[in-house]
Length: 314
Image (cartoon, rainbow, N blue to C red; front, side):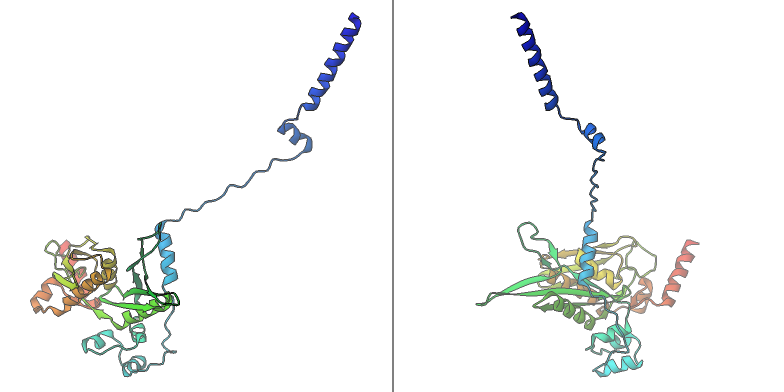
């Protein structure tokens, strides 16, 4: 009996050992060695971080046209346009000083090819998450039986950063026609401003700011511009700073009052203040003291300015 019990216990142990060997699973490394399979390495995902400024630049590039003007293909319709194409008029000052009306935007393209264009943020986006952000187009809707009919409006400004600028308003049922209307209207409204060095803190003699204090008003919005010393920058609202930058003003102080949240009135007040620079009469001595320049900065004046600065440094 004792022998039979020991034999049975040995058999049960052998069976258990076989079961354990079957239940044992090989490790991942052993399995890889047996099958000669290399572990798969997933490539790391490359994430590009784009800043806000780059996104805004890409949006502006999409919004602004990049057409080049060809004078030979232009067929003028007005007498002024024909004179410009024939070469009888080669300066924009002749048109502005004589009070001639520009009825073709191609006249500005022909006489001032270095004009830059920018759109002002007069609208705001709708929605729960992105609502309230400033946008180029201001959207309105008309309620009809057929449904809502949207309209888009925008404000464009052009300038050569050398004493000339223009501003225009465009409205249409779509964004692209509204933008083209605004740019065309801005070219028809080209004007020049006077610049100088009217700040008592600066005696550089370089026309980098305005020569004296001016004020503009539209509705309840009032904008006052003050001459600032060199290096101050444009201390004014962002959209108004775009106008001053394209007009050629580098340093200015400002003060605003009224409902400045109404962007259109605020911008119109700023433009009116710039127009008042030419409406104010100055004597010859005053112009000489403040180095007042109307329109573009000529090479002779710039050389005189550099000579005066060199004398002061010596």
